[in-house]
Picture 1: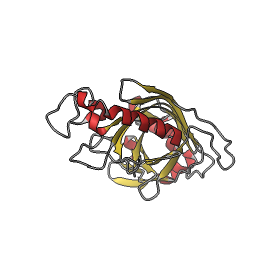
Picture 2: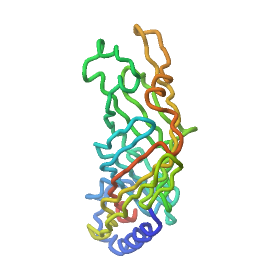
Picture 3: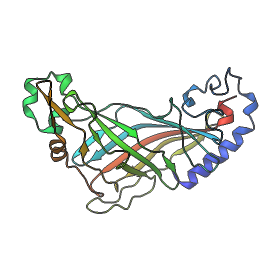
Picture 4: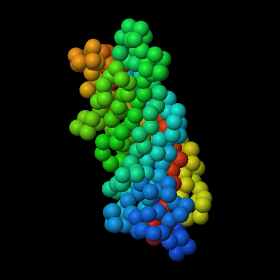
Length: 271
């Protein structure tokens, strides 16, 4: 999210304050006014006093590739929270943050592990593999949108704690609508600035932004455990890494994300 875009958001938010009085009252200071429930993940006044604006972004398409695995973003993911007047200190409550959406990974668990014999023991549904992106720190809005994340890999074969990235060793995305400058072998790619609207009145709406990054690194997998005979745990981190090209250094990974964003002053959302 560029500084130019932030100035547009700020201008729209200031204009919206003039019509705050028209918002319908609600029963609680931390309950959104009717019609604004989609911003419920933005902390209310009693939860975090310094927030002045609420942000809701929907990542509605694109892809995420790390190592040799490329995952389409086929199901929308939503990021909801709030920022202070300087667009810093993004925070969220239990209804906000990044929604835990399962994206299907092509090739399934056999493609991830190389264990062909699993086809003899698992049905088609159990062979499917899903990836869930999780925040491990607050997003930072500036010239780029910085997202510290980890990716959870979900399949019964992998155990319940199979991750790429962690709070101490995150995947750090620096999403830009401009042009990247990655290390080789990746080549520069370009995003696209959003279409700015003020619709409905008082909300800054940014449609169809294309945010890109192909300069990030991805660590190796951790916590992936195959349990044989129901009680013998065997680490398969090495299998996952060798089949997926992990760890993958900067210049070998890529994400392209198509994003719609709404921003409104918190006073407009909460009574």
